[in-house]
Image 1 (tube, rainbow, N blue to C red):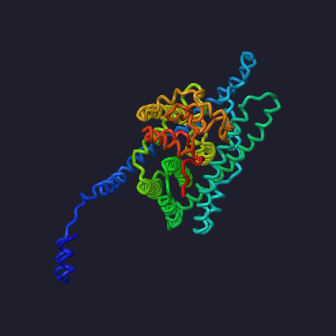
Image 2 (cartoon, rainbow, N blue to C red; image 1 turned 135 degrees about the vertical axis):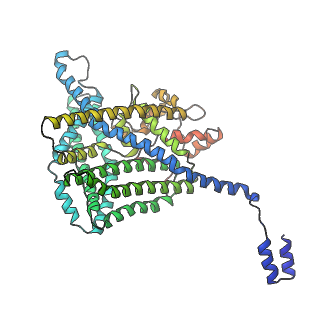
Image 3 (tube, rainbow, N blue to C red; image 1 turned 90 degrees about the vertical axis):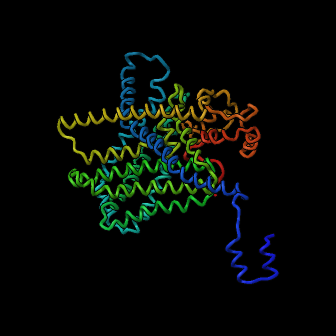
Length: 494
């Protein structure tokens, strides 16, 4: 009991009370654990920007690698597949397959690109731009929000459509008539890519209208929409798995935003006859959009980690999981192409965006004469060089990240070690021929409990068993290998 309080209670006076308030003391060391924890939270929030941007930069270049693949290596792989088809009658049927499964998928991707690009010629970008420009600001704001939601829905369902096509075209067939099922899947995939490309074109047109508006009110409203995202995210419960999904989504959104800005700049430069001075007019708006994206991501992740007691080291685990996808896709008997793996992890499907970019570039840049075609060829060689160098650097960095996370052993685990996976019914993506990361984790990357058996316990019991065996620090890495962009994983976000 405070002795001053005893004196005041026996002989209360205002003077004594003021003196006690001025001289009373307190000791923070009596609650050392509480204040140490609060200080660590501050340090964590200060580390978030650096760790988050490391993940974002690594993921951004993964998206660049998958996107450049469509323009550089995919045409060459299609040519090799066509060459095999043309030379097959001369060489004879040496095997049971005309084409390997990967070559069949490459041919399908090439046909989808060609058909979708041909259909995009009937869509007038200028007419769409003026149609959108005639709308009111509030209506355009609502349209832009609807387009963002539609883009996520299209990405989710579109990857299932493409996977279903690849698996239908490559699965073992007992009768030749079973191959007819590829036709409806193929036209469905072409229709999806065409619609998704139109959707992204409307997004680019809306952003272009915002750039060219005189008072910049629409651009300000669209940027404020990013900060509304903070309100809808930071006050929800997030586990590490859910935060991993959000991080992948943010990487995809940032890369898509950069491509949309590139399209807007190309269209504006074409309208001003490629005057270099106009770039300085566009630069403040581009810088404002990019800065708002980065600021919103940092604030959002900083407060999510603060409210859910998640350390900043979790982003290195996320980066190791993405690196593991890249390294595992380079194995001889990989289950899926890396570009498809990126699509499942991040929800980034490069085909619609590639179709739109080709359409905009060909309408903005006129190629005439031998010199122009020579420049185009040299530009293509530059893209191939950039793709190869980017892939080499990413592969080297990924090997380093996988080694730091002690995940090398999982690269060599065999499907035979997971007997329970064969008894489970396949998911939609597994039926599509190129399994999702969850499928990879169930086959080539099985999870084991401490007793050595395949893990089939509920999540709560499994976590308790792992905590008892002092292996809880490895659970995030194991769980992350089972997550793709469209899987409801971990606890629900309430």
